[in-house]
Length: 148
Ligand code: ADP
Ligand code: MG
Image (cartoon, rainbow, N blue to C red; front, top):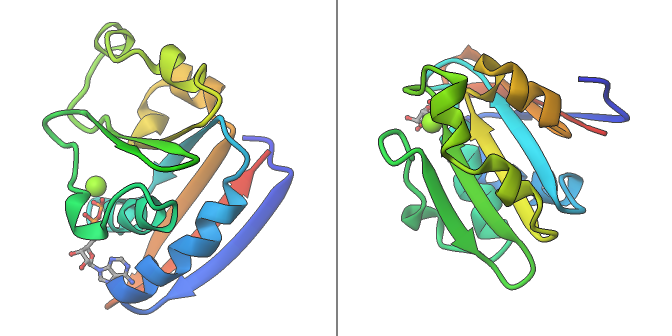
């Protein structure tokens, strides 16, 4: 993705990732925006989403769970509606089409956060942001945020 802004953060614990999410949420404004969350299993993608949803006042972090089987979870905040998708188990563009991604990003207040979105060229093409999380060993993580 061609990025206009890039920011990097290091965190040293899950709580640190939740805390940094407030700044990450600010960087992701304004909506609508589709963000691909990159990183291995266990990198901290879902943990970061918990923090972003909480920062936007859309739910408490413990209410945010991985949409591994449900594919999409929705959290409605006062200003922003967060859609959290996990496409790990999805295999084809045809299955993807049934999720209604276009309708989501057509909503002016939508922040769409997609784990494993990079599997699908059509998601990459629609992304206006990307967060890459790298496990630096132990509980240390590097977050690289790019928006355009
Ligand atoms: P993903 O969605 O990328 O598969 P999760 O957020 O579900 O990852 O899981 C991340 C795991 O790594 C959790 O068990 C979490 O406690 C652990 N962890 C350790 N250090 C961190 C950190 N700095 N940030 C986020 N998660 C961390
Ligand atoms: Mg996850």
